[in-house]
Image (cartoon, rainbow, N blue to C red):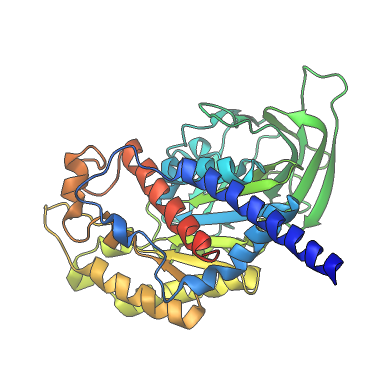
Length: 415
């Protein structure tokens, strides 16, 4: 009996030590350099009636903290606010400071699709490449998880990606998930490293359109080339890459597309399978700004709700029971300087869908200060003067607010 009691006390102290160590790490990250009058800090929580829908994700964090094994995978889906990767990039940094660096995660060479590339990785390419995007004419194109694809018919084309540009973290990798159209018409992708005579890799096809590549030693950059072995091979189509390692830790995948509407990712016939390949434990959906930017007279609440319903169905199809966090769009002004009520309408349908799909909600609109708060954000250098997008400083603050809302709710479970 005494032995059982002693064992129980030891285990209790062990769990307490893990938690104390963890909360000290969290508290180190959870401060704000400056407090702004427009921000409603007290409202920076996961909506209390929906926080239970994050428990499967929190249980995964519990297991990781006790075992320090495996990966924690977050996938953040959104529009231009996510494509630039200021918000998601800083959130990635905060989460990985706490849970470890499991890899850079999903990237797409946006520069090669003639759109803005995140500043935290560089692209150098050769050959002629074309692109299709879900928010533009895309008929006849297969679209990847982030609603975009780049293609080439030049077997001498290439791309070089440096995932460590302007970063505090080291994103060297020995595992790479390559999302590409691997049919009989496709060039064969290969990786080269001219500086290392012992370099080699192994491709492990998972299913049509997705392969895992394993490298014999950690790599600092990606040098992708192609081989053409037959007359049928006439093109290569790329949907993105996931840069990973075999260390325990967290991966924060940013899936962004400039101008994305709530319907945009539903146009991708590969969305569900490619999301499944990222093995998400938490999916964050930050959409609605572009839908809400329409004049009130053209706003179709039913259409937006159905678009989101389809997206949520597709997310759940990738991994039944996966935790989903819906975020409300921030406040903005129309081009004519006026405000509209579409954001208020969208917030209501977000809560309606959270009940229907068992999703958690983070009401960023309320946290940032509600209607007309975008002017305050601009006044303090947190938003641009288009009153729609944020500055780097503003996106990083939004990331800190999101991180703290998720982790404060996680900590509550121990009180």
